[in-house]
Image (cartoon, rainbow, N blue to C red; front, side, top):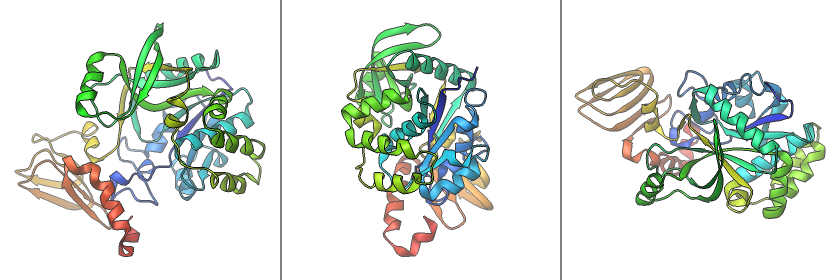
Length: 361
């Protein structure tokens, strides 16, 4: 049953550079239909159906992406898609969400979700969200959702889980500490220990609880949120946001609060969770041919194996190659080993230094 004091905030400000050349600054990955047949942002909203209605779902994105984000989720009120004038990392975004929620509902609680995850089954996801809200609402806990690791990932942060606080349908732990992305041996040790969870970047808290933590640990971000409270849903909102953001430095919510606060608990998420972070991640979501190739669009392979091919409006043919990413977009083509897919972002940065390539980025 919907609770009228519950909100959701979806962070959708990333540029998705690792999905270039399909993902560009003007149309980043969250508004593309990379998996699931709908924009990833729209899928994030779809996962909340029956749990939180569109009028209480906020999108925090960059000012340049407000229009394309509204196109992706037309069921949301236009005022709920909020553009940051400049990137100040996740602490500022979370604080801004707290200000909007607090202004609209003084006792409101909200969850932080992201626009680049694939999650299923939705029913279990919502069940864990429901439990996380109940934990956050009955006390002053900052709740995070941790994911049981299925392999020793070096690409995710981890949560060191301590005492089991609840052990019913949803297990809840006291969070001992947050740890950064580990090396391979450390990640293996974390998984084998059984008391570490992946840090999913999903959080649940009362707006007031988050603001109290920011007041103690990251006062400039707190001051921004308090300054924005009286102008939420007024014509002064955008101009005030610009002046407030210009005073801030960049800091993540993990550094600002989660690595410092003592009142953090973790709800264990046992649903399937995929962070779609680079081209090889698509292998988890599309059928492979007999040689292990994933072909999306018009592609053909001969004596080739283990490749990811993305090609629209023309045929891309591969002969005698293996373990490549090949992406053919309208204005650019990418070819790289799957093992180097994380370096696509570096290539985008290199191209950005040459004005000739401005229109393909």
